[in-house]
Length: 262
Image 1 (cartoon, rainbow, N blue to C red):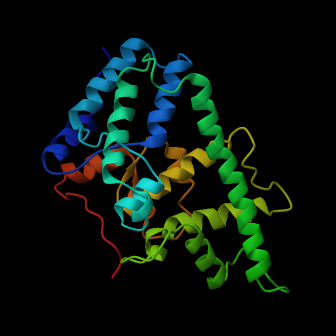
Image 2: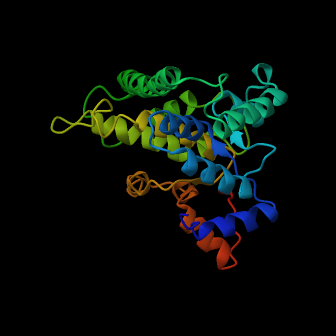
């Protein structure tokens, strides 16, 4: 049997100490998709469920994004019901525990849902270009330097209202990542192409930024994703962590916590 990763026991201890762990909505979808395409065997799948059960908050084992996050932050309360978020969390966990269940989304629907996220990302880059056309100086404008007005517009496009901390703080890394990718997409040589093979999942990964608004650590084993953030100046950059990093902080007695800038 494959040996459990060292951080597993630390996550279990953290959950007993009041930390709440939930799976991201897109993580649930991707894990089910892996099962469907045979990348995850039945035995490995069950081992994964057993280990996740050791530290996940089973009251909220999976956490949807977008509308639910805005609702939890009381930014979109008219369209959000707390009980629906809890019910969806339980449904997603049930699907993940039993991916052969008839009631869960099938392989084709999962592909469509993931593709919708990719398409939304491509469309959003087009939206930023329209913002720039309206807000940027007509002459002498460099895509390398966003004006405060452009960044504020991107911040506003990611928010559904005002809050304390401000929405600009909540989406600090998110908006700067989007701006940087837009800038790269405008390069004359070797532009960023979200439709290319090795970039096509960027539209899925970008959904992870929504959880930073809570605030929350977002734990990932995708070191390439983390490396891609190193040139972005944002206080939230360290909120994306590997399980090893979060485990090490816990083990050395730091008890990692997040705080908004004062």
